Image (cartoon, rainbow, N blue to C red; front, side):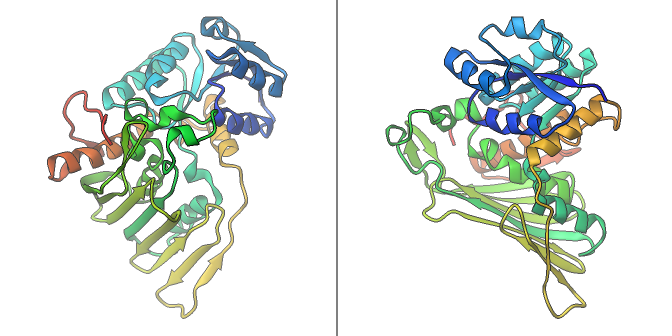
Length: 350
């Protein structure tokens, strides 16, 4: 395989994860790091012995074949379209965009340019999630019929002035992130879809929130997701609870699977077994696996990355549907796995 030369767009915290992923990939190297903050670009460039740049046009004119975009969500559509126009394959961090219209523009731009597009939904590549999906595919619990997916944390319990100066305060503004269901919990929504398939309906309740940076961080966002195959899943997230809690439970016709830690183990319950089986999981680095999945698509090993643009759009659709269902107090329906939302719908409040 040829070496993939990479440009890093955005030098914030997530850039470190991608630098490690590239370091673990035998066929990749980072040529340059771009950021509007020259000091941030310099720090990241020094980590990879690359060039620091503050002129993106200069980077896109170089002979890198792939860019990794790790910038605020609101900037994703413009950057992806720029990169595609320059003939670069794209790994874009999640969430894909703030609205379905922008997601589609990103997909269209990459298809028109003949380049691959992957969206950084890394969670499905961590050990316990990989093992769970594999066990389900092997029929270990029969047909998945229900589930409970929880991610509750304390991420926004502090006021901005109490947080380290280097923290990404832009995450507190739904105008930049789309709200917590898109910014954080979209990982779990992606995993849920990877297990249960296309969504059919969504209902949602949102609990009382806490103001951070003048914006409301929901205490609890709880949704009930119905799938085309008849399965029903409860999803629950919140970012200002007192005790961080994670839990993943998948119930099937012949058994069940449960885990808390991303690295496992996974508890396997079988209808015909008295004891719970603890299934160990391979200890993997998810960012490396999703990068490898993209470069394999670029190299023709398979047609598209697992986390392609269509998958990214469907995840944004599900996140937005939670907000829309709460706002309207009614069920949101889906067509072919995509929510029936008003044209240009965004979440700018929660």
